[in-house]
Amino acid sequence: MLSKLDTVGGDGDHGATMTRAMEALEIAIETQSAKSASAMLKDAGWAVMNVDGGASSALLGTFVSGMGDVEMGEELHALTLADSFASGLRAVMRQTRARIGDKTMMDALIPAVEAFRRAALPGGTLGNATAMAAASAEAGAKSTSELITRYGRARSLGERTLGHLDPGAVSISILFAGFRDALNSIDEGGNHV
Image 1: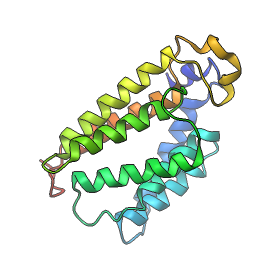
Image 2: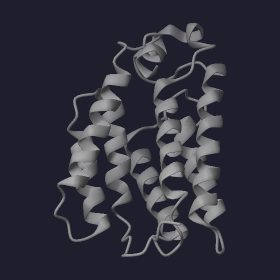
Image 3: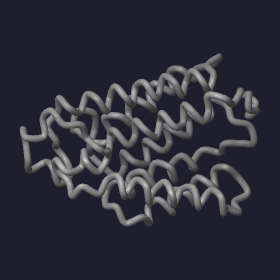
Image 4: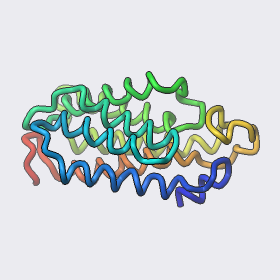
């Protein structure tokens, strides 16, 4: 599906790139010897950046690595994860000028991180915060069908990109849906419920 979306303005390999990126992420996590979650995120981010996939893998790797700039501690809390997501977003924003409305992954990433932060405010739970982030990422990805591409290969197509979803935004939407599904069963103390 992601590769099909990428045929509109790209070279049709976004699905394959994301598969390789997620495999690299999984291997980095499984084989990591880091002493902390933060160090593990840094290592995993670099593994994703090393995937040959153009801007998508570079920016996704930057996001994961940037998440590692926040010390996670031994217990997973919504506010700490909100700080980590925000740190990852800041790292990506230093690498690209793309913002909401440019028909890129940022149309899903920025709303997801902002929604997670709002839902994680004191008293917020991981389950609720990830649900809100996933819903915001999905809405952001869907909004890209109404936009004209301003970055990447497809920018030269102009209005011909109208009516098509951005594959990078859809990937971010899928990623946050995965966060929601994985974290939905973990309580604030890091225990599966």
